Length: 541
Image (tube, rainbow, N blue to C red; front, side):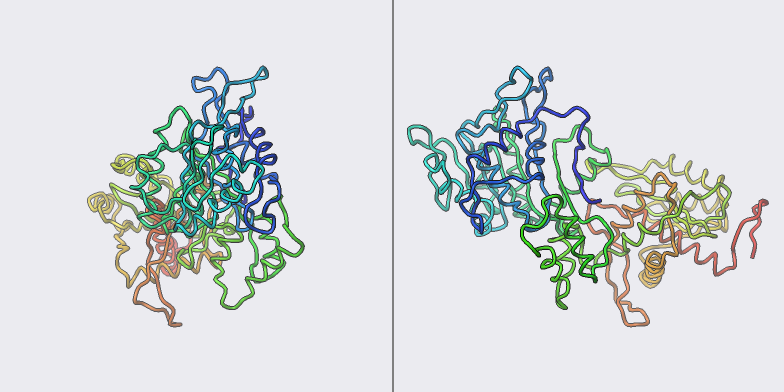
């Protein structure tokens, strides 16, 4: 994935106020603090495209004609692309007494006509008050105090007040940091979340929830919120991570008529980060059509990887805009992605199977491995939807799926983690004796060795996945969501050994555990001399 834009563009473009707002920003706004301070605002292609999508409205004839399409907008670009400037420009247009940011009807050609917000209230949230002042609010303060329309605003460190024609207060923007109670009654028309990947502490998340709830209080002004930042650390449960997961769900088609617009660009290719030229190309891909801001910029960024003490995971997040967690993923997603084989496992093949899951939470999966090739497929998967609190695994479907597996394939062994499904596993043992075995995944002394074996098989390319498997993407998603849980065990080289755990509460990895169990059964098949199945279903030793 290099660019993720959801919802995707429709064949028939939506009406949008974007062109009017882009022209307004370039005519009336300036750059904030920095090398370009005070110069007229300039929007590159990405920023214009984002504005066009962010300000889409329902067309004429629709029951919601003229209303905003999206309640929330999210921009995720790498460090150094003037994202904070972009947020401040949007806030400037939302605050300005002449900003064409809400639909006031349509012209003769069916295009929306913009109007300013009546009595705007714009809270701008960051981690600390100092960051608020240094980031979007600080940039907005300069635009309002030093721009060509300075007479419309009264600017201080605590607030920016919009003035009417009589010099009276007619709306305001305020900095906000981790204090949900103080703004609980606020009548928000637009709100900003600067660097949401850093908003992960309970207080910040509580402030966020309060602010989102406030969006319903000014219905006539069609309020909305904007998030701008870079990729964060997986598993940190930041506000940005929740938005990214929601965007992926939209991309998978799991959310109908989404109220979120998300624009994410990263270095999606496979690069050798030990080679400077490869790093330069990765930075170039993450940057997009904007290109270098100055000669040698990409090379200067790439040289940061060459420092012996560099935090390379952090560099990936900041400059390549990749969602990573430093050393916490149990398996290498990139290696897994490169291990695909054409086709799929044929009916009647000798396979081993792994089963893991729970009856009331998360997910349940069955993964099979072809003994001869080491190819894996996701046979079945059941997942609790993210927006459902009470959920139960459909046991009838599970039993039917397992029976069909034993009917279609030559199953040598099935390894099962029986927790919360002991009776079901016991029934399978009675139906298929000497084929179904309990394999408990909470016994560290055995699990750590299975994890290491599966990790090594993925890294070496010994384990494969079927390109013809319609659920291959789901299996890859679970492989990437499996995290490390450190134990007191070490390997022969003195390196720590791991069990599996979640990287994030909402990210499921049960198919990865089922794949590990299936692979462990395949290893036992190989060590027992089992190689293939005859047509009579007799095993060859």
